[in-house]
Image (cartoon, rainbow, N blue to C red; front, side, top):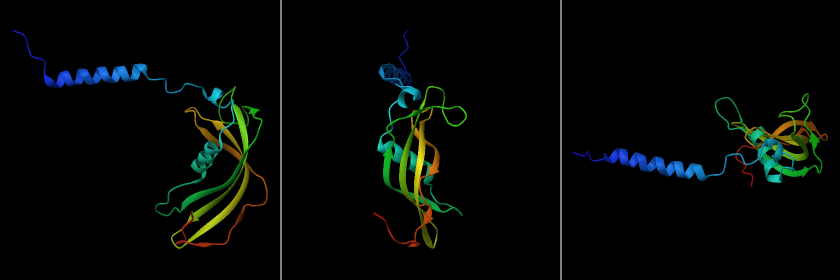
Length: 156
């Protein structure tokens, strides 16, 4: 007497076969190494994403929420080699500098405080292949508070 295959085990074997077929034909997660990615300059959108990731945060508890409005981005035309004493990353990576003008807004319960920044920021690629803000230095004397804005004012 032959046993009938159980429906559960049949479904499991079909799903396993489909997953195996899907992942065996998929491209590897990282088609380029961080050093290869950093050989070309980041795009303006990648710089904006990295700056927002470094500066923005959600509020909660006693902490204020911080939003970032990027006014301008100017990416350098030449990269520099990675230096072990100064940079995040590893040998062979390129570091790109961009001049970024942005405004941060700290949203408190009763008011919003804005600061205007004009920084030279170094960008590198992390091990996941994403551009990240590395270091920054002030480009001018714009690091000054702007007039307070009412908390209920919505920015476009």
